[in-house]
Image (cartoon, rainbow, N blue to C red; front, side, top):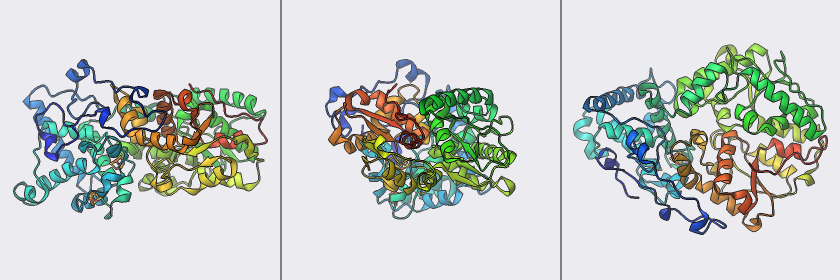
Length: 537
Ligand code: SF4
Ligand code: SF4
């Protein structure tokens, strides 16, 4: 079922859309044969019995089915109440204006659909059109919130039946978008279908308690409670970093010691704490680079009042209030230490959350200076403070652009200038920069893999990036040639790591991945050669 009309969202049918691998665009070699591609596992009977599963072939939210008419009515009433708040100035203090403009101005030209990697790589499955989700909300908006809407809006905007199925399917549908906003960039009049998906998530989270557990309970809530959504408290983080320092000292031959809680330091470095757990070499490389360049820096180990060792802010993906709470604590960490500025490590969503969206809440002394690690690394690399031997990076390298840094913030050139200087075999994917495609893990998908959602991510949302990576390396796809996808973002790395593992891309195509700072340290003459290790786990 690739064809679906907007009104199907309310119909009493088993499933609105269906994913069939035979419909998907083929992948380049060595994944051009059906046998070379993993299967899409169907949902289990137990999952189908227990949860709402009638949108498509996967589940993110694990919503229980309503037990009776009363439950169904509650879903509709709560949704309408949330909708009213979404379109009120007092409640939607972040995005009311662009949301309203996006509701009222779509020209129905459908240009945006071609820009969406999810729609394209699903084989043009209607329910994944950027405008499909938006048209549902648009019809509800005109029907319930515009004068005379119940009588006249169906003639102008199309009718829609608001029942419990509409509500729960729309909630799931809000999690079939990477929030990459490639569609918004393409729209000739600036309608933002990504924002519409985002604000739907917000309505469901703040008004109905419907959210992805990975983002809320295991994400923002845990972070506010213990200091990090990884569950690491300051003691554990410091222990881990001590171990990383020892390991990095051995690997580089340098004396590495991460400074903690240094008052008045020039820079407070805040990583996505996932780096410390999953990619310790990323922190190790920052520590080695800063040591070699003589940077005055510190990390923060505060937990109760601030969370200065984990720049994650999943509120960006689903709930403005959660974003604000986390951002304020991040700013307090910097104020408490009296540092000159905060530098955000290699994490795209943390960049956008703390440097752009948080501006709405960081007033007075909390309005601390903030900088991307991309520009700081560029300054160091071109300052002459560290010796560099690019011949140590003599392997094919490509760059994945994290949407949040590039399209959504405009940080495009620093990382490229660095790579052109330190990686002689660097080449660009097509397209790249502000026209990049999402890795497929954006908006929190990188940490979601319940039920069979991993299969959906790997086959649908991540398919375009996989195609781009295979194409850029097509002349050296031989697995004996080791290749490096540079992804300066923790969430993107998570998605690319899972993609490499799912498709066995290391053994079949010699493709590995990592951050940007690791490539710098790999060619830094202060360090022993061989900082990058090529094992894939
Ligand atoms: S959102 Fe923009 S590009 Fe898409 S159909 Fe509407 S006007 Fe056209
Ligand atoms: S924001 Fe990205 S993933 Fe979402 S509809 Fe637009 S192009 Fe598709």
